[in-house]
Image 1 (tube, rainbow, N blue to C red):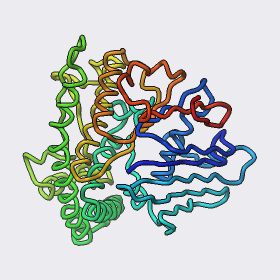
Image 2: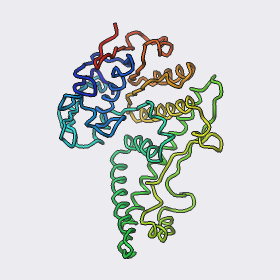
Image 3: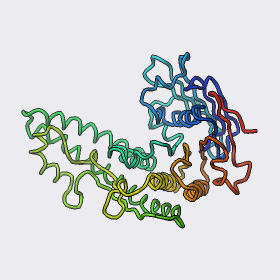
Length: 370
């Protein structure tokens, strides 16, 4: 999947701008505040119906405009397809169309344009709460086992909500609680199995990418990756753990164990990687995780589009070049931002001129580099 062209209207500081003949590698460059990151945000919004910078979607609409409109022509194995999203003030949901048909859910849209984002907030994957790591793992599971995972996860969340509501009521009988506990176990075990399978396929790829990126680098640190399913699955089944935890769950009024408490832990030796690695090393590790996930999805015929905001920040020249080469080797469409084209010039050495498209972003407009 690639974007052939992309147009943006009424989004952030863009009144109207069109990017035609996009390449395999695309570079948006310009001064701070020119709108480089906003273009990446617009592409992300097109593929997910949300922003990676804010939850307040109203702030995405340009001042003085009543709506934003994003359109793209996609290339799916040589076949052109059109994707568009429109969001108006006062409306609760966006209008999303693909091939002229209205898409009703974010899940449908995510399957159209799989995106991998590397930006300044990427550190949250390691620094943030477990929820973010679950979302990262589930994103890959969704694309590989969409129907089975979505159905099981929806059933699990409904059962969890109902069970917690009953736990908060001191008068709830064991008989009333049992059906929701049974459903929690059935759907939860499916979610766990799918996550674990995805994780076990991912880890060797992450380790291989990480080793390649750090080959020849100074102060390289070995990392290990651990999937915690939300209870000690080696010691007991989910049903057994919920049964033993029931008295305390009743006192607290919520379910303490299950896939909703899962996490992925990354360690340097015996310590959390977050406490050992420098900012540059953390960014490298996160980039490797994203690249590995894209490699795994490619094994299923799913090619991602990468959005990479300010790659040069916090990375030395060696790791910057190594990461870029790893990205280029996957033959997926890439979008970079930088202040000056020269900031990434050494990363693109040897790349055929026709493969690299540069766009100068200035005052909310983007024009091909001359």
